Image 1: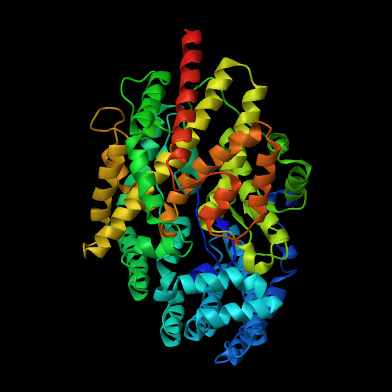
Image 2 (image 1 turned 90 degrees about the vertical axis):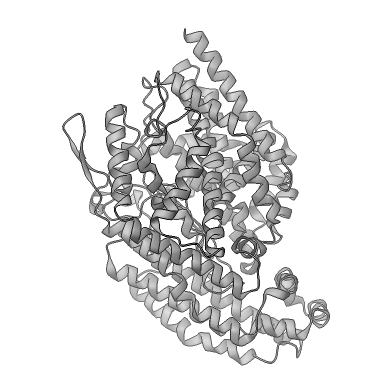
Length: 630
C-alpha cells in the first residue's frame, strides 16, 4: 500500500511526500483496453488532458524563482513572512497535484517511457522547488524564535503556519545554512535514483521465470502473479513457484545489492549532513517520534515471538503437515473454503462493514466507487500492489488496486479506502499547510477498516470452516503487519547500522543478514518453520526498503488501530467522534500526540500487548472450533 500525502515543509522527498509502501496483491494481468471504464480511475479530474498538465507544469517552472523575492525579508514584518509562506504553500500545492497526475499515469503502465519521463520531470521540478525555498528555514533561524513568535501574534495569516514555525525552531541544530540547504535540495534527483532503478527493474525489465504447474499449465512468475501463485493449494506447485521466484531474484543479487546500497548510503549521507548520530535518528526526528518507539516495537515483538510460533504451529496442524516450510505460509488454512467476491459484492461488504463510522463515511466511500477514484483490475505493465494517493488536494484521492476476487483483495480494498478516507477528511477539513498527515499514523485508518471488515464478516458467517478461514485471515493480517513488518524493520535497521560501521552492503552480505533475522522470527532452528535457503533473497523483492524506516509504522499503526477499533466497535459514540477527529486532523500535531488525542499512547507497551492478547484469543477460538470438528 502506498499512501501519498503532500507536505510543503521539506525538499524533494517530503515536498511531494513519496510515502510509498506497496503490499502486493496477487492478480492476473489483462489488456487495459478490455477493462470497463467504471473500473479505471478518471485522471481528467486532476487535469483534463496531458496538454493541460504540461501547461500547468511549465507555468509552475516559470513561477518558482519568484520565491527568491522574499529572501532577506522574512524578519521585516509578519506580513512579509506570511506572503512568503503562502506563496511557498501555493507552489507546493500545485507541485503535489502535478506529481500525482504524472505518477498515476506512469503506474497505469510502467513500460510507458513517456509517462515515466513525466514522473522524472516532476522529480526535477520538486528538487528545483526545494532549492528555491531553501533559504526560508535558515533565515527563520537567523531571525530568532522570539521575533517570529511576535510576528505570529500580530499577523492572523500566520496562524495556519504556527505549528510549522515552532517545528523549525525545534529542529534548529539540524538545519543548515542557505547555501548548504540549497545544495542538499539540488541533490534531490540523484537521491531518487536507487528507488527508480529498483522500480523499473522489478516492474518492467526483470526476466521473471516461467514454471510448469502440476496441471501442465505454464505460468510466468512475475510480481503480479507471485502472491497468488504462492498460495496455490498444491504444495509442490507452491514450492516450485517460490523457489523459482527467489532464485531468479538471487541471480541478480549483485544488482539489487548495489541499488540497495545506494539507497542506504543516500540516507546516511543526508543524516550526517544534518548532524544526526544515525540514519534512524534523522528519519524519526522529522515527525518528532522518540527512538524508543522503534526499539520498543522491535524488542516487544521479539519478546512475543512465542505467540507467533503458536500461530505457526496452528497453521502446521490445520494443514496436516509433518513439517511447515516457508512456502506453506500463504496457502489457505481451510482448503475447502474458497471465498470469491465480484467487485459489486466487495463494494457492498466494505460499505456495510464501515457502518459504525457513520453515514457520511459510507457515502464518501460510495463516491469513490461510483466516481472512478479507483483503478481496480491489473493490466499488463501496471504497477504491482495497491496504494492510495491523496496528493491532489483540490480534487480527491485516487486508489490503485490489483483486484483478483479473493477475500484478501476485499480486505486490501477496505485497507486502501481507509487511507483514502483519511486523505479526504484531512484535505477537506484542514488548510493545505496542515493537510499532510504524518506517515507514522498513515496505516491506522487502513488497518482500522480491515478490523471493521473482519468483524462484520464474522458476525454474518456461522459456518465453522468459513469462520476458521476468516479467523485465520485475521491472524495472517497480524502476521503480515505486526511480525513481518517488524522483521523488516529489524533488517532495515541492521542494513543502516552496517553502513554506518563501514561494512559493505553487497547482495551477499544483505542476504546473510536477512536470512539470520528471518530464521529467528520463524523459529527455523527450533524446527517450527523451515526457512529454505533461497528465502535469503526475499529482501530484494520488498519495495518498502526504498521508503526509509517506514515499515515499522505498519506495525505501530496496526497496534494503534486495534486499540481504537475495539472501542468504536463496542458502540462508544465518544470513541467514534475522537476517531473521526483524528482522521480530519491532518498534520496539525505531532503523530504521537494525534494518537494520544484519539485514545492510544504509542510510547507504552499497551498497544502491542492488546494486539497479542487479541491474537491469542483468536487462536483460542480456532482451537475450540478444531476440537469441535473432531
